[in-house]
Amino acid sequence: MADDHLAAPTPLAEHRKLAAFAGEWSGEEMVYPSRWLSGGPATSSVSARIDLNGFYLIQDTVQKRDGKDSFATHGVFTYDREDRLYKLFWHDSLGYYPPSPASGGWSGKSLILVRGSLRGNARHIYEVIDADNYSLKIQFSPDAEGWADVLTGMYRRIH
Image 1: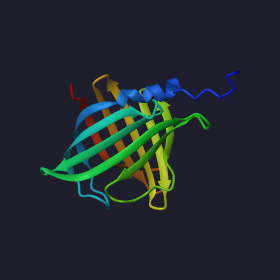
Image 2: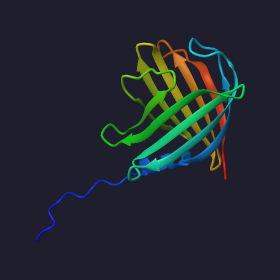
Image 3: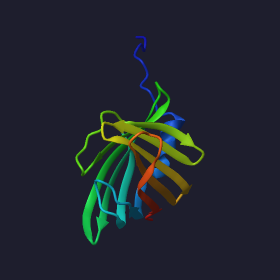
C-alpha cells in the first residue's frame, strides 16, 4: 500500500531561533508613566517554553511592584512561513485584545515586533545579549513615528 499522506510540517530554523528566550528568567524593569500605569521600578518572573511541536514560544510573565503582583502577560511567538514574519500574540492583565498580532523580524540580535490598534501602536524589542541575558523595550506611539518607552527591562536566566 502506497504511503500517500502529506508529511506534517516541521519547524524551520526561524522557529528554532525563538528558543533563545525559552527558560526561567528574573527581570529588573523600569516602568515609565503612561496613561495605563504609573512609573517606577519593578521586577518580573518570566517562564517561557517552546511548545506545540516546536512551532511556538509560549511566555508568561508576572510583574511585581512594591512587593505585590502588578501586571501579567501571556505571549505566544511564532514564525509565519507564509508572510515570512515573526508574530507575537499578546495578552495582558490590562484586558485589551489587539485586533491582530504584532509582526516583525530580526535586526542583528534584536527581534522587533510592532502592532497597531485603535489606541495606537506598540513596539516590542527583544535583544539577545548572550545565552543567559536579554533585554526588552516596549514602546508606544500614537502614529508609529515617534516612540516613547513604556517599559525597559534586563532579564537573567535562572539556573
